[in-house]
Length: 300
Image 1 (cartoon, rainbow, N blue to C red):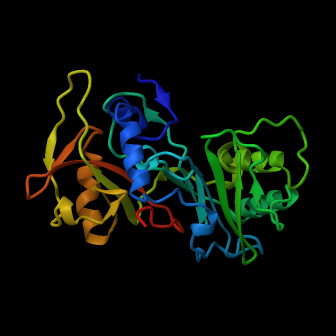
Image 2: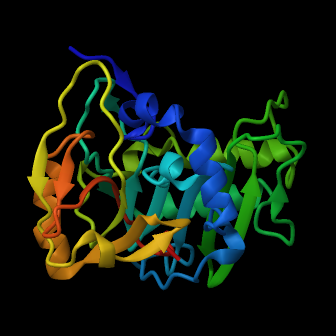
Image 3: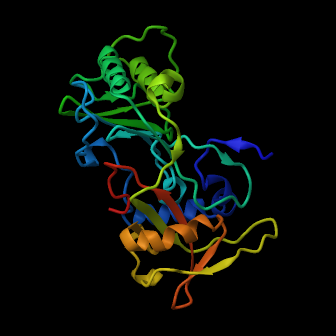
């Protein structure tokens, strides 16, 4: 039985080939004005309609994700750790086989969450002092460390919080509005199966309404593995696919509707080394991930 890892679905496979060119690519992306990681101020206000039954559950929304100052190919496939919308809890903390090459597509799971569970989350946010005027709980972050972001909509008001999920804290009972309070809340919402197990329904595979796709020049395989090649299933060739992200060799798009129905089954049958060949005989690799409700366009 293969070992399991909680790392991002494509980080294991891409790491060996990408590390050798990381400095050069990162420099190119930065110089070309590549999009910075989305922070709370960049996000649109979601319009969830969570199940009624309590004041907190009505219109409740939550999304927790992390950003890091790296070129997009290293962070593109990272799923939000937790999303709650329309009474659905989407868990992005997915364990994937630590094999190379692994599957190209590793999707999140979804469970229903009760109004009682949503009430508990909102109450915990209040207890931890996170629903006030303070939004920055970063403390003294280490350079290059991941930053945590939480977007909350509670009782019709939106809160965009930023903090350091990995900050070392010692207080057993965090002071409201402190870095430790943010850390405690982050641990709660990214571990709902342990915190609120009785308020969650049965787990199932999440079927997204949209998929984020980054097409980029294929990297050479390592370990003597020969990449397989498949026909690019969409009518638009890579040269016109989506928009440039950082430079013209990186094309980014959010795929929906008929294109999603066409591309998704092909992606799910591919691995991390699969090369796609379009009608102009251009070969590209793909980084893909599910989009969750209320999430901004990663290609913008």
